[in-house]
Image (tube, rainbow, N blue to C red; front, side):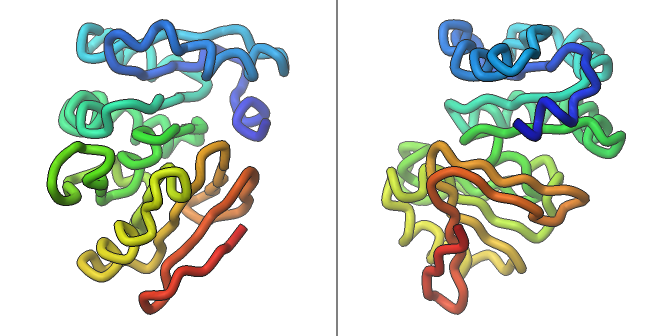
Length: 196
């Protein structure tokens, strides 16, 4: 796994929402299988912000888990934790985002109606790790074609991706360099194209 190769051997900081402890093996089992056993768990919002920042600053990698996307945005993007994640990224520390973690990574975070439970999608500030990029997750599984079509119509961006579950995209210096898994799609002039 590319993520582990890029980690320099220290603790991987895992950010998740309170109550997510039972699903940590989803994130750690594969990493342990390939030899990485050092993790720092950072449940939010119960972890004090200063402690979370300290742990992120000491980490060799950061994982932002999935779940309530707006909750992750509130606990990470809207707090000083965002600056520590951005600083880690700028210092070459690998950042992995799963579902909600992927959604909050671009400069614009767009949470679909299916994800938020609201009538329409929610557009809000993201972390800014990927500029000029829109992301839709659980793409095939949640039938998010119309969502991606709508947001690419409403929000100007150069890049947009619909990402299936069990799919990874690897960006280096904000450029897509590799994909693996089930499927990645993009909307061009209102038409859906499969990239992978």
